[in-house]
Image 1 (cartoon, rainbow, N blue to C red):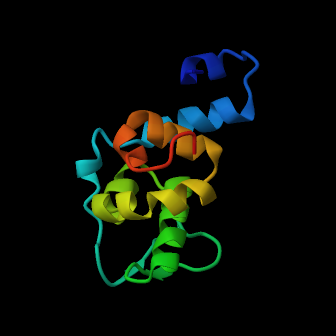
Image 2 (cartoon, one colour):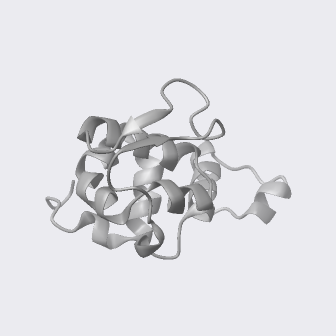
Length: 123
């Protein structure tokens, strides 16, 4: 995996490598750090939800998945802890992993194999 140092030294790197490093650097140490709301409407700050919908009712699965996709893509480490909830992430991961993008899916599933428990083999 490319490191920030190698990126600064001018080594040619792929877009995927840059994204992997970005998302990996934002990961929590454990899923237990994700203590965001489990119910109700969540208003994301502008630095995360900078375009489009910014308020999400996490009790509605489709809105929860949409919010989690935005937070996983745009949020910083402290945002992940504040706006994501471990139980909701695990519950919605089978759908979220298909919409969040390959790099996010690979980074999160490599760091937290428990996200793939119960998924069909090879999915």
